[in-house]
Length: 571
Image 1 (cartoon, one colour):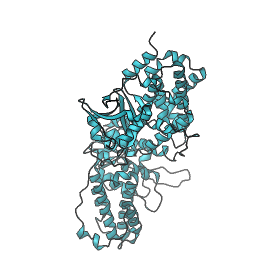
Image 2 (image 1 turned 180 degrees about the vertical axis):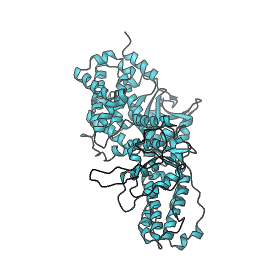
Image 3 (image 1 turned 60 degrees about the vertical axis):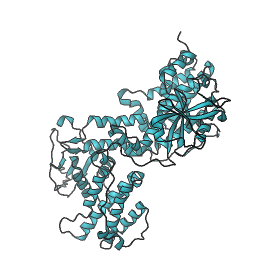
């Protein structure tokens, strides 16, 4: 066990001062002396030595290493300070617990444990002790709901738990007037008005509550609810077998609206196009204008294509790449700073919607729980599509002079994304330019001016993976917030911690590991400390938003290579 241990970070320490040693036993909750060089578990406290002034200062310092979920929660509540400002260690421990509890206990387990902790009357105590313990539980629940927001609020069973706690406070508020403030807080959480009487919520009328479990521990694929009509997703509308337009649209979007977006994107008359659902067995179904174009059941069984209508209204697929190569290169007429700004605004809307919990689910879910990582998946998909978009735009341009202009344009856009602190699109564009099918275009790269080649080399250096992406990490650390990280690398960091350390040690929760994961996930908060100013492009370009929001990409590497060899054959 010793060889697999991680040295516990300072931030996990809880300071006790005059507080006596915890009363629970070592088999349930273990401590380790930070100065102990041996690979042995220790339950000893560490006392400081006398300082230079001769005053004796005794400070018992503990490090949370592992424990049962119930004992960790008990320790957490005992360390909470309600009136005074929380010390940093206690705040961190509370945040670690709330961010990662789904790894080692179900939401039902946590609800039941909190209900057991709420009365907390095991022996005769004075009223101040009882009210203090009640308030600590309420403070933790308030922090929990604040952190999770809609993750809790959209589940009816979890609402029942909050209402149960609310009823408990309502019953207690006359005996413990100090709970009045907490009562008002729960009214805000539940969106309720204080219109109920104590009789309505008497203990005799409380029904047994059943709680919905969506914990990773028991079920990696439990749903957070069905899609609502305003939810936005990326919808792929295929033009050919290997190319599609990525359309960001609401679930309630009609087939006609989707068709209008795609027709504009591929520069083809809308009235000459039809939206067709093609199943994987080859069956075709033409969608009518008012049909809903998006559904998850549809996506799992078929693809959406645009077909051309001829004079007899029969449907014909587009030929691979031929018509698409004849379209005008719109990007050349768009200001590079404005285009980068639109990319950044779009990425920020996706990044800002990601819940910290999504990184936990993404890392621990072995079966890829899409329901709990929707926003994160959108940003990852966007990063991949921007990379493909860069390659697609360049390879669909058959004229050498325009292709050179395009490469220069993308180098400038990448530089602007970096300046705007959007490292997600920055990485995607640089990787797109480094795609094998693009980097082999020797005739194109030979005509790129020296100053652009030098700039590109500087930008490339930030994507250098050596020394664990040191160049990127150092540059990103110096950037002020708000900023958008390269999300795949952040996920790699969390995965590395997860796979390199056991979650349970001797059937106890390895809280050292969970602290390191929570600490990495918390970096999202620093990135989002401030909001982007929603700066608008200097000159509103009527094609800019649809151009950036709905990317046309070829998602097949073989098709990209064929295009590459067609425009610049191997000598």
